Image 1 (spheres, one colour):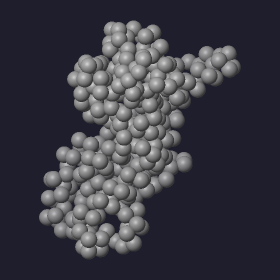
Image 2: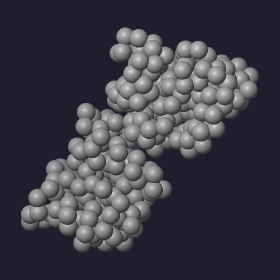
Image 3: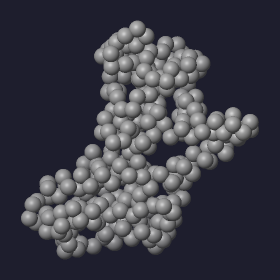
Image 4: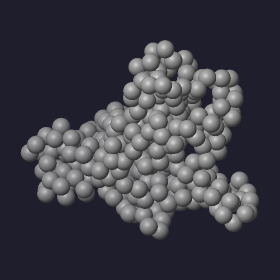
Length: 320
């Protein structure tokens, strides 16, 4: 499973310095795999320095030239999703990151690596490949790799959230409710905010201010993002906070509904965009953030049904 995961990411360990975070059985497995794949140096990293282990301080100072990091600890696993086992900014030659944690699907460690353009992957693929290997041994059969990969894609597709971002009036809620996936729950973060505060968003902002609204929005997004198998329609300004984007990306992919500005309409129930001037200003302020945070940009198609189909097709394409 570990070797299959490393190969899936497209990493070569031959001649590379590898840091393996952890002390348990998975750490020992990773050490054997790294040696088998030709790593030149392998260091196991523990919170306490001991025979056979370096500590994290030594890892980030004496071994900051490491090219591969493999995390076998539970740090970053639900419900401790905000944590990361190591700060990768210390490693200026880093080429790849492997994290065995699979809940959330994408940990902060993997998000940090991908933000730097470093190849990285979470542990779900390894989990699936371990199951495939067990079935092969138990039934004395060989399962073709394309079949195993298809099992992974299907499993990921049953778990990974679909997150819709975009301006007010871009069709997030409409399209979200048209996406038909068995076992998936539709969640509108604005509706969840109103449920928690017991009033409308307009009333909330008017009485307590935008800052209070944004803080409550972040709380809701953090809670909703910890779930899987959800279709999440976000508020127009949800992507303004990096912590919201990170939370949403841990278990989902972001689909930006790129509606034409002419189709957007100011409405009284949204005090931040209740006039055409406010709406236009918000669009200009946010458009680049929408695009840069999106995994997929959904074009302004003729019907909401067409946009829902586009999202499902792109999602399948990304997960193959």
